[in-house]
Image 1 (cartoon, rainbow, N blue to C red):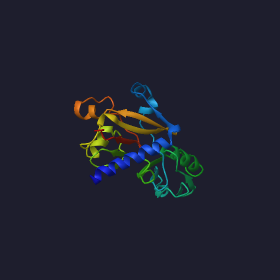
Image 2: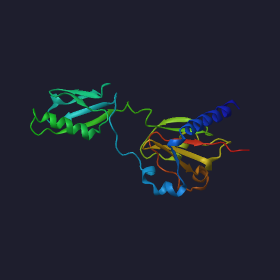
Image 3: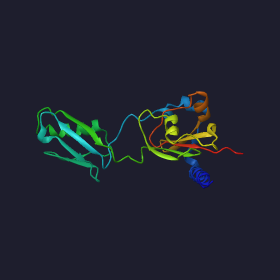
Image 4: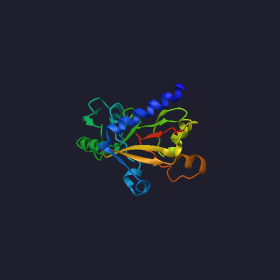
Length: 211
């Protein structure tokens, strides 16, 4: 009973937060969801953030190759060229910046950059499942993750759930999109039309049914 009351409370808080930002909310109809590519488009570019660790390799120049963390000022340090901006850029963009600066010291530098440790976006990239599920969860986003993956990761729905009234809250261009998810169809009928791929920051809320 205590757990159920907590579930109701958490769901109510989310509804209140959403209601308080009503001017920034757009509720999409079912047909709009699948016409709107901005809604369904998944994230395909990662931007470096503070506390990430990057591996910078300058081909045939091991003395210039380094593994360094991104400092709080958003920069990394390299031999010869000093500080290089990194936070907010893609790995490819930082590689180009380094290559251009190294051209004053190295002939035709070949620079590659990979991220070895992702720390900066831990909470921004999480997916949350709340409401009438077995275990309300905040989980790390994984590429290709779907609504069903997240719900199963939260232990599935509980006995009080109204799965076909599930909502997905997604932030797009500063506004929150509310997408209807027919979770009952997904779980019990194999109808996967609303089993869409998730984005970092998505929130799935499964309401309780009204007795």
